[in-house]
Structures are given as structure tokens and as C-alpha cells.
Length: 291
Image 1 (cartoon, rainbow, N blue to C red):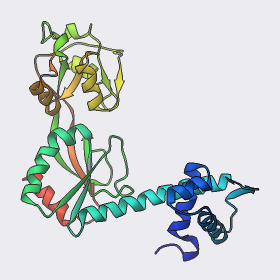
Image 2 (cartoon, helix red, strand yellow; image 1 turned 180 degrees about the vertical axis):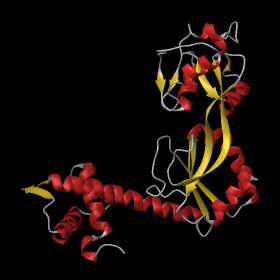
Image 3 (cartoon, one colour; image 1 turned 90 degrees about the vertical axis):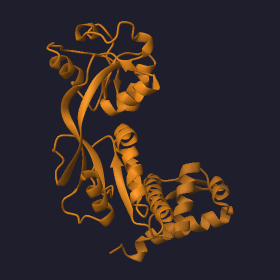
């Protein structure tokens, strides 16, 4: 059930408020909306009368938003953007069944993407929408059918389908590869690049090679794309998962800085809510990935 009509102003009046807050003046808002100044003023007055709160300070020909008006306009902007996104989704999918996935960018591009291409070829009626998420989120609030998760089975209230166990290798720019692959001891003397989502990764890597390395410092990045580019530019050594490292090796932009891949803790999963019925598009994807 939606709110009573008295709490639902017209789209025209909300657009007028949003434009005034964004552009600063009613004249600028009128130009942006292809309306007259008087038309914008009428919309704003009608809005104030409907909600029963003064949203502006008026003095002569000037019009200034009150703090309540600013807060309301910013909330309105979020609602209008949500409405626009919903409209775009409907327009893009039409009557086709769709599947909304939250993906990890690098994994989605280099491992999942090629597989989804084959899935879509076999299920041409299903439209897959993808959005990147690198931080924890609520599947229900963001209205995703499923998500890619890396780590262990610590996400509450979801089912898990294991996709890939993580294996990493140390990499570097070809310009810094003289003598590569290097011994693990040699890498202790090199600049090491770190990823926020993999705290302690280098310490675990050295531990796997029998070296107790502590207090390893260096540049910090939030995505594999950024840390990869930094290594390409010669800023230092990075640890990349196999699916991304192999892609860069084939392109010749990076080379192995160590002799082998090592298994590390962490798995890529497809997760979906336990409490929600599985849609036909999601069932088709689960069967295909698990087959």
C-alpha cells in the first residue's frame, strides 16, 4: 500500500523543486524545464500548499530555499532518480524475463562475463542486468536476485553456489622483470601494492613460501583494476587472481614475478536470498553454472 495522495505531490512540482535546488534560481529552473518563470512559481506554491510547509524564503524577486526545502529537494532527487532507473529497466527489458546480478568488477569481467555470454546464447529470452558492488550490501534493499561474493560462507540468510577457488600469483611490469621470476626473498625488497579487500594477502603469500613477513607497507587500492594498472605502470608488485593474471600475461602488460600460483583462503560464490522464491531466470542460471 502506498502513502495517501496528500503526501504524493505531482511530478511537475517535484521537478520544479529539484531544479531550483540544483541550479540555484527559479529562472534557471524554468530554462532547464522548458517552462516559464511563472509556471515554475505556480508549481512551487502548489507544492508548499500541499505539504503545508514553507520551503522558501521570499524577499522581493529573490527566492531562497529554507533548510527544510534543501533537505526535501535532495530526498526528491533520490526518488526521481529511482523512478528514472525503474523506468529505464522496464524500457530495456520489455516483456522479457530479467535477472539482476550484483557482481565484483574484475571477476565479472574476466571470469563470469565470458560464461554469461554462453548462457545468454542458450537462453536468449533472459535479460541479465549487472551492477558492480565491491562492499557488503543488503540484497533486499538493492533488489538484486543474486550476487557474486568472495570469501567464506559468512553472508547471513543466503544460499551459496561455489564458482571458483582463489589462486594468486605475484606480477610485475615487463620493464621491471629482469631476472624474473624472482625468489620470494627478493620480493621483500620490492615495492608491494596492497588491495583493501585482501588485507594481509602479502603476509599470507610470504607465509606460504616459508617466510615470516610482517609490517609490509605500500600503496593501497580499492579495486583490482586500479592495482593492475599501477603494476603495469611500474609502481610495484601486486598479487592477482589467476583469471586476471592470465588475461594480462596474454596481453603482455604484466609478467609473473614469482614462479607459481598459490592457493589462498577464499572462494567466489553466487549467493541468493534464502527467504525469497527462486525465479525461473535465476533457476536457469543456477542449473547452468552448477551443471
